[in-house]
Image 1 (cartoon, helix red, strand yellow):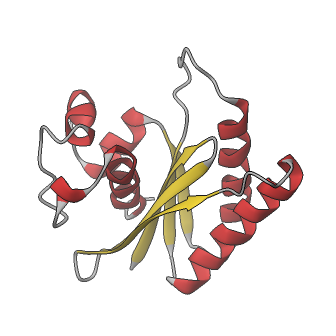
Image 2 (cartoon, rainbow, N blue to C red; image 1 turned 90 degrees about the vertical axis):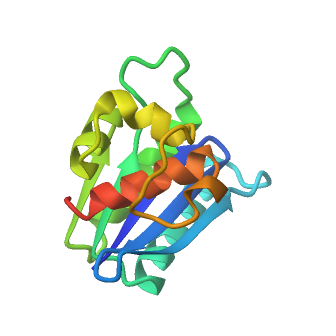
Length: 152
């Protein structure tokens, strides 16, 4: 079974595809939202790209890392993109998906919530995927979200 994990920024999103049958990280990639697009077109671009990813990688389950509810720096653009991705999940053929903050992702992956940031910062190696040290902060969040997607 393949699961997808997504971490959003205002101008891009990072996705990771994990295959739980082979315990293999299939793909990790960043997708930039073209700056030339106005908001509605940019959101349409994100939705179409997500649907293409779901089809291309034959995703069955998915998760999206969303903004923490107590965040001091809410970014409307990021929240809009997160909402469009959730809508794309809901209107796709995937079996299940989840929307997670740090505590939700941690519990789905089976790690302590207090250790989440240590995993992301590279202080703790994630033994479930190879080359953890070669991934950046956003890629690690997407991978952990994909691992949590296996339990969506």
